[in-house]
Image (cartoon, rainbow, N blue to C red; front, side, top):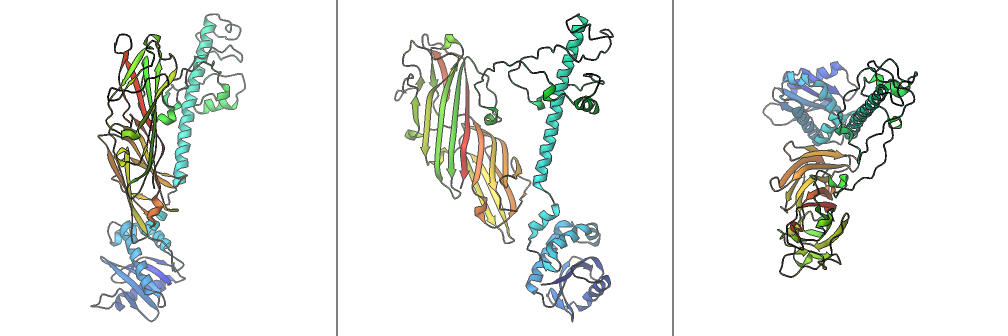
Length: 528
């Protein structure tokens, strides 16, 4: 097929906008459009008409006509399909099909026309692809801009922290000078009431010992006021940067005074990257840490290929007077049956049948280790029962006739004893396609450029907000391209129902205050 021109004209044949795809003069186009109303047959439902030279394929558009002018040898069926795509683009870009609205969006319409037809030949594109081309948005560019902004913000916060440290050093020097200290009178002049530059050599005050470096984003140091302090008579690049940014620039790492190394006391919590948004638990003298990991593979049509749950309970006692205690476990809300197997530490007694589950040393005269963590109990479940799945995922792709696919995905919390945080459901996308997400959805979504997947992010899933849905449309008609769906989260609680009900002394039965930190992490969680 060869499309000579695509035009929108009035019923009198006056052109509103027109795009020529072949070398044709304006007078020629105006002449063809002016003769168009005269050749339209009356009393018929045909959408094409031929003259001696060209063929008109047209469609009414309220008070206007959208027309494709083609040669007589073109394929009429392809011409009609192309015309429908033109009409759909016009309807999508203009709120109404009147002359004023068409002229208002003339440049955008002409750009869309060029995406559909090039040099007179139809491009292999559908409506969704034309819309994506016109948006001209680069996901990779957006990601790089976000990364650049974050780095800039972090650098500014770090510079503020350095400025505060520098200001503290300057004040310390002035205090020493006022007190007649060792680094005082021979270097500082002008009296303690005026401003005196910091000497080129000085005894740096000891930096306060810190157990962990604070995050740059959590500091809000005051801006460095005045012209700042001068290190010598000549300015280096960093001092120039300090002056240029008006006190927001700070010393770099190589200029900071090294801090005194100190021993860091380990906390009975997960590493920050594993713990995510779980609330911090303040440990008591008797502290129990419950950790579980899950490996799970669901089937897209329903069913479970495999599920493995591993867990352990670590006991940490910091008070020697509380070493001789016993722990009573609460009754689980979910019964895994005989597939859930427990294994105690060799010095810990076994669970008695049909009695409370108690964790205590076999020798009651001994006590648990103090100041170190001891794994007193481990458990494992392996099976294929869907009833124990913590979070069910239903991904439903539906191919459309226009080369796109509508994808509906939903999740639902199945285990009320666990609260999930930082849930990420990653749906792979067909190569070269980008989704259009409906506004009414739970949580947030983003595009993962490294895996070319749509990441659906839900901050918290609990018994009150147990389910959510997401719907999007994307180019492609292969439902298998949206699998495997991968899931990650960090949970608060125990899937196996392992919780401490009470802690009591072995000698007198007195109850002891304790704390418990229970979490679930994902090793592998997918829908295939």
